[in-house]
Length: 316
Image (cartoon, rainbow, N blue to C red):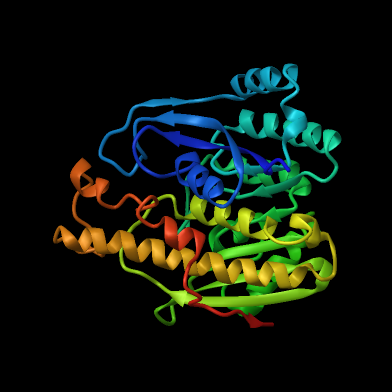
């Protein structure tokens, strides 16, 4: 049987691990064919002191999709994953693409990571929030916003557990049956919290995990890729998520992915410490410093495939 095939639409860098460079290897490692469709092409991520490259626009995406369609390749996709889109015109193109893919394959699974910002700051133009909320989220089966993005999309300010669950319910009402808010920081302890919900089974849960020192890029991209793969593994594939029994699949997948993320980040921190760098230091953004903060994906392949079981969900 042919392995599942995902069209992964997000950013690309020549050096480093963000966007498709963070998502492709883990998906392949976990059994997916991956076709990366890049929305930007940069020399490196924007956290470095300098970067070069270009941002694509919607018509360029449309041209690439036309080539795929002309060769019958759109018929082969089982999954669609989106990350950083960046331009309003690309969101417009993505809306048309999602509708086309779902008309070709009614079982296609669309996971949307709405990359808008973090820590109270937008990475993109404010108009993209409306485009995600009004035009794209309705087609998503699974979404993986962080706490800030969940607030932007739902209109519910997340201040505590009750408001986190309220935001999730609002997001469900927009279309997605599986909502995973990847990290919420209430600022009261050393932990971050993931909140997730699977509406067909009325399953809601949280997973707390330690807040690690340091600034890392590509973590959300890695999380979404690993989660998509984990949700698809096992009998029935991702189709199980449509059933009332799908909640247990979501719980197990999130527990596994949070464990993988923790171990990948700890491996990356060990590399930083080996060269005498404090992971929590805020020194310059020179190439040498930033290079050692890139995620250790190849070195961590064992943690992506078979992580230790470190975290357990608490049902809500």
